[in-house]
Length: 251
Image (cartoon, rainbow, N blue to C red):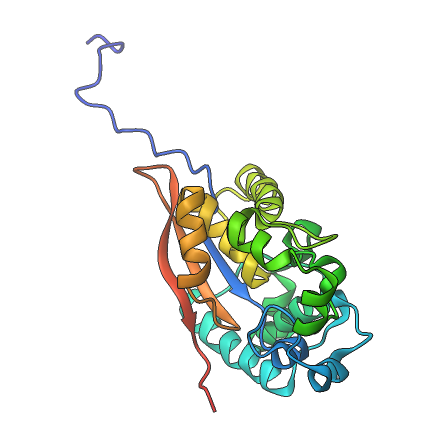
């Protein structure tokens, strides 16, 4: 018998995993500045500013409600997804504390098996000189700002001294490339900020700039909401499976 005969059939090679198997983005839970801004671009008035004045963005803490949001979300994430191999946060206090409360749902032994890292590319957009301004002050100091913002749109406009969302997309791109290179086949949780999360969506879902501008306003990103992607072997891409899911209950 010829031992070198060709096999009757060959098993197909397993598709190469070139991405994380699971990637969950979590916006940080409610912060004190979220409450003070009341969903507006600037602080609405002097009373609102007094609540957060003098607190740097990276030191902004969660509210008591935000801490409970993160605790509830942690229980749900553990139940649905189990352990993550890596969990990243931006280094800002509100993302760091969100992750810490999420991880309270896990036992000490489980937490020891998950690698926690902070990454500077996950940080919030830099709002520049208008950071602590009220709406009236920003309009008085920069009377051209509203027309400029309307002309350039939400992606390319840059607050005085700050970043555009296109700038944020650059570092989101670099972070994703790191994940694809170093975390292929792994389960990853990323705790970041609302605007930064939108730029991750733009890159992963291949939006055009115009689509990103429309979605910037139309696609809500609730506090402590989870957006999930899974690796699809047939396309070699991360595919959206769950969008802005909220696990906590509104009061």
